[in-house]
Amino acid sequence: MIEGDNRMKHTLDITHEHCPMTLVRTKLKLAQMAAGDTLELLLCQGEPLNNIPGSVEEQGYTVCSTEQVEDTVFRIVIEKPISFHR
Image (tube, rainbow, N blue to C red; front, top):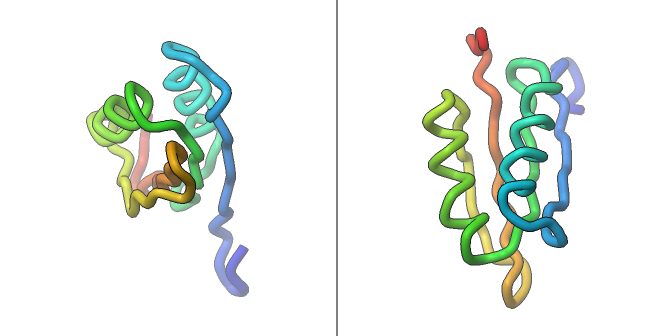
């Protein structure tokens, strides 16, 4: 947490999950978060990397960054908007 800020940083590793559980676990974690919080999501290339960013953006979340951290593993940072009302 940033001092003076109530925003939390959450982490979820779905590198050992398979579709559709990658998206299900991501959506469940995002639903538990408060508006303004961020989720650092670790996922594998392929279907999860191709599908999850677009899916969460369609639902109103912001994909802040995507970076490759290992050969086939990527880190995506997703923010739940302050004005999120789902």
